[in-house]
Figure (tube, rainbow, N blue to C red):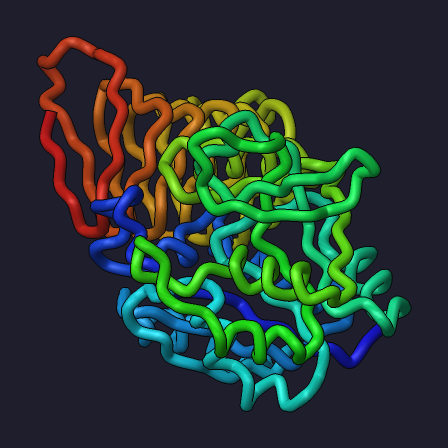
Length: 361
């Protein structure tokens, strides 16, 4: 399709996702058992972009490099650019000037999820050689949280404003930007905002004000910015809704599985357990008799689910759940353990647990 380059922004402090981000970057939090930024890489590869730079921040950048490596196992060539402290999207892009080397490129926020990929947008930008930028917009309920677009009476994009108190529209920047190298000159002239960051909205505004050809397009399917726990759980539901059933593991009784299930290699569902989809269970996980895994649950690899009910939740790798409680709307970090005294009365619980947590109920 194209020889454009790709940039994945993998920085940020992830303060709204603590304690999950005390031990790793937010973009590596799994949705349907796959890190969010892996979906982003998959979108770039699906659009024919395999030369990719990942911009890392100060939250465990080594974990990012350990997971993605040189990109070969994903079908890409990955290099790394270190930003450190979060100084804005435009600052992160500016650090990639040497990587881009005069080529056109896509910048994709590593904590965004998009239905249908970006191949159509990349194709459009590739064909429009005179277009200097193409920004993607999506309709949102809470535009105050995002960069927002303003249009004139003819529907032409005229202005962008970051996190406005009084939004001029409900159309937010979707965190996916296609640029020609002219953007680097615009970035070089920016000054830090009140947040201490170089704002991408201001860089694009420079291009608009100086008459560059800035196009825009609209995302028709769903789009999620996974900056909060509730956003991650909703993204998990959206992905599981589109998941195709796959059984590589085993289950002892047909009545133990209902609906669309992805049961990965080496996992087993024992007789007397119940898994109701859509749900995914990772490799080498065991679901014991009496345990219940309900719809919109993602259970990681090497987990043991001895007792309990789990619904609309994400349980990461190497966890043990042995409780007579119902766990709902929860995100459980890797290597965590939730147990309870058998004498305790069952209750519903909601958790946001960081890695290696232990909860005794």
